[in-house]
Image (cartoon, rainbow, N blue to C red; front, side, top):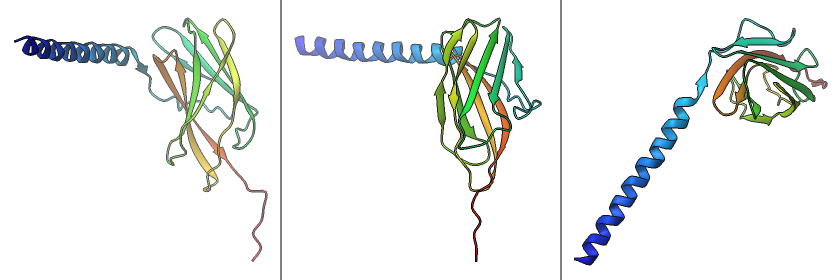
Length: 156
C-alpha cells in the first residue's frame, strides 16, 4: 500500500510540475509582441522609426550605405518604452544567412548602442531583417538591402 501511495504522489508531482512549466512558458510567450516589418523606411538613407502601442523605437545603422564585412555602429533609441536589455538579431529574408545576434550596451536611459557586422552573400545583393529585441518581450523587425562588390576580378 505504501508503494502505491508513493507512486501516486510521484505522478501527481510530475503532472503538477508539467502544468507549472507549461504555464510559465505560456505566460512568457503571451507577453511577446512581434510587430509587422518596417519596410517603408530605408536604413541606408538614415534612421528608421517604428511606432508601437506604448511608444517609439528608432533604429540607426552607420556608416551608410550598409555594407557586409564592415564594422557597423548600431543605435536604438526608445521613447515611451522602458527597457533593461536591447539586442539586434539579423537574418536573411530570402537567403538563410544564419542568425547574427548582437546584444547592445545601455548608454543612457532609452539609448542602446553597439558594433555589429553582416556576412556576405554570394549573390552580391541581400535583403536583411534587423529584429530589435526589447527585454525579450517586444520584437520590431526592420528590413533593408545591402550590396557586396568583390574587390577581386576573375581572369579567364
